[in-house]
Length: 353
Image (spheres, one colour):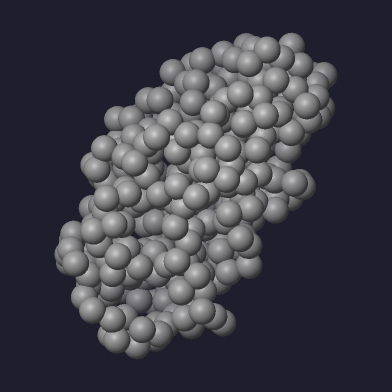
C-alpha cells in the first residue's frame, strides 16, 4: 500500500482524520455494535480470558489511510478488549515495511509483493497472516488491453520498490516479460501523482488500489486490464498481508497472538457488516464518500483469511520476482526466514465458524 513517500489520500488522507475525529464514546459503541451484529461479541473472549495478559500494553500500527485496510482501524477497540490499553496509529514518512523494520510500529497490513522484496532485502519483519484479496486493479489506455501489451509502454508508479511497482513487475513476469527491460517506469514521487499522470495521458498504465479504481471508473479514464479480486491467478492470492516487527514478535508472543486475533475478528466484521463499517470509516475520516467506501468493502473478500494459505501467496510472488532477478533469495528461503504462521493456525482453530 505504501510508496517511497508518505501516502496522502486524494480526499484529505491523514488530515481528514483530524477534521472528522469520531469521539471515543461513539467509536466504542460503534465497534461493539459491529461485533454484536456480526456474531462476534463473545467471539469467544473465553480464549482471551484463558490466556496470560499481553506482555506489553501499548501496540502501534503504521497509519495508511486506505479503505482496503479497514480491519486495521475497525480493530482498535477489539485490541483494547484484548488487553492493550494504548493503541497507536503511527504516521509514516517512509514505506510501511521500513516503519516496521525500524521498530517505529509493531504490526501493519501491507501489500504482499512488497513484503517479499523487503524480506529479500533483509528487513527485520515477519509475515503473520494473509488478510484479504482484490484491492488492486490495473488500468490501461488505448492499445493496452492485456498485460503483454505493456511491452514498451509506460507505467506510472510512485517510486521504485513501491507496492505498485513490485505488483506490476510480478504481473509482467508472470506473462514472460522482464519488468526491467520491457516496461518503461514513470516515477511520480507519490501515489496520487502517479494516478494524476495516468489521467493526464502521460502514462499508458497505472495500478490503483481502493478507492482509486472507483475514482477512475467515475471519471471514465482508461480501461480495466486486471482486477486482482476477480482475475486469476491473482484472485487466488492475498493482496494484503499482516506483517510485524521481528523483535516484537519474538519478545511478545502473547501480545502478537492477541493482536492478530483482533485483526482477524475485524476482518470478519468487514465481511459481515460492510454498511456499518463504511459508516464508521466515514465518521472517522478514512473515506468521506459512504457509497465508495461501501462499494470497496463489499467487493473485497475479507473472510479470505479463513480459507486460503498465505504461504501460497508469498511463494507465487517470490517465484515471479526471483525469475526476473528482482530478488536474490529463493522462495523457500523467504518463507523459511520471513514467515511465522503459528498464530494464524492457532486462531483458525479457535475462531472456526
